[in-house]
Image (tube, rainbow over the protein chains, first blue to last red):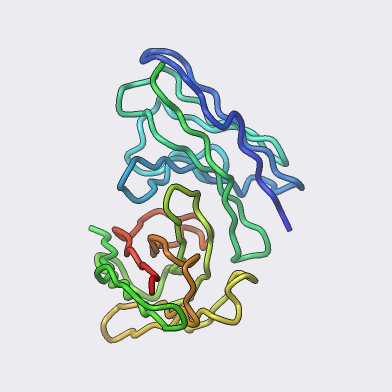
Length: 108
Length: 118
């Protein structure tokens, strides 16, 4: 069973700074990885899929990279609305999926 | 535009069953898988299962294999999730979400809070 480990658990930054979030898989998942953003009281929103493809309507400041077991979500310059919880998600045994435990991005 | 609209909040007693609906619109219903994900209060996201609206085939997380049933009604473009033998730990918001390339979730319902309490 594939396990996803996200780090850090909490990231404290200021608007305008660069955010780097990590997701590590316990075994290779090729590029079958997605990133989601969730704000309080809202459903998650797809940001990135196939490790690096931006979903429809997602600003260019969000980018994804990596393959195999190590992946990164980068927010180039934080906007006030970017402070939220971020989850990574992978395919396990198709079409099963699993999520990481999340990284909370908070205002410093 | 693509929309997934879920049924309203529900309160159930331990041992009962709950059935949550998810009505899809804005795209051909049979072309995309529908996944179910739940989120307990203050916790992360947990995958429950997936249904293919076209053929009706289902796959469930091992944890829920014996207690969850996903069905669909193509005449109304609606998917249903039934969870049986409810316990307090099943208290959560349940989301339906459309599959992009089957395994990524590009559109989500608004969520349905299911509370299990005696």
